[in-house]
Image (cartoon, rainbow over all chains, first blue to last red; front, side):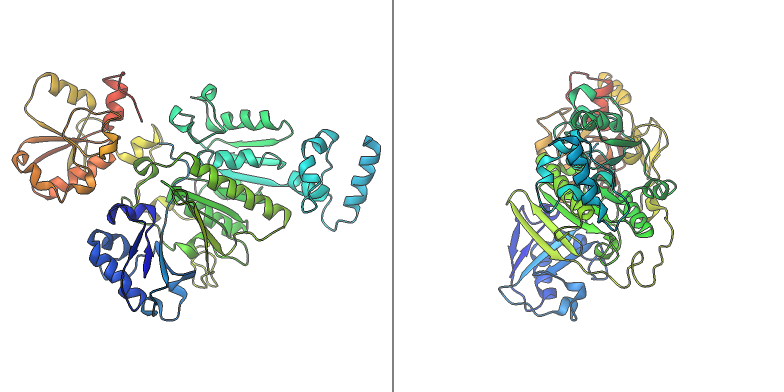
Length: 94
Length: 416
């Protein structure tokens, strides 16, 4: 399935906006993604393997935190994952 | 239309309103707002609601500039900013101008806003928004528009909006990407529902490090202004419960569903944030210094002989002296390759993000004196810690970076 990579994290995917990975669940797909791009791991996951709380992962239009099976939610090839990190910019006065 | 007839029509229009009496529009205002008045969704009553409304723009930077300009038909606009206008702002902060460089941003913004609309009531808050003053400033406004540039203020604005029950028209940008939503309404989620905790400092690059496309704050700021207007008029579907994602490079707009988190510490069913907290501490950063430019506080760019996390900080004056004395030491530039042609000190370049991977390239310098520099002194401090942890023995950070060099040593060098 396709995973949309937000601008701040594209530095770790060789500039790619979308990465296509196999995976039967959301968790599998994220595992494949961080396997292919190991530098992404610390930005998405804490040391204990839990998703960081300032990173949101959406399966299509839904936040996986609110899906009953969360990261274990099954995903089809046609589904899309979107990673949404916190960004704070606005003034850039420095 | 004769004035008397118009006045009578206005009375008739407002007479049926259940709300408190709305302010009347003068004939000049009627001419000014005629394109709104002939829109049935706005009309006389809508424009009067706009005139009665008070909107606070937190920040008059990239987002705040287009936001405030497009709100210049709202009766009262509050501006919160403690900064002054810098030439590097003007590429996107279009409420300021070349003529107002060096002025307080709130004064500069007032000049432009009053020039556009002399009927506007501009309230200037030339302060840094803090937990001590936020509730007092916010309480007089109907809608808050968050156009700040840092996580501490984002959480502060959110919590103050939740506590005071005021909607927050939110916008945020980074490089080519933007986000917008409306937070902290009664029925909708707040910023903490989406992001319960801020990222640790250093994990997400700031705009100063990451850059931003000049039009992007324009695009996102105008979206915020649109939401503010809709909230005041009570028309359309606002972004309550939705997050708009804008990608200016692919020119794609997407909205994602946001849920109100029942366990949200601010707006949930059993809130733990019942008063404003210390947001610097919450975001894991040091308190800003009460004196000196913000970048000095943020980047810990301090004078000679200071040591930060075991790394000695050296001044540009000392670097100059050592270069002139032809001392034997090594200078390393840890900025990005695209920054090098803008200005450089002739030092070899290894971007801070690649330093760990490429540390072998520095093997010969391991026991030499190494001075690391970047643009302002923040990334080079990170790089110094990386080298120190890798066993390098004499690593120093150039305080203030190449910006300080341009300021104090080589005035012909451009600043960016």
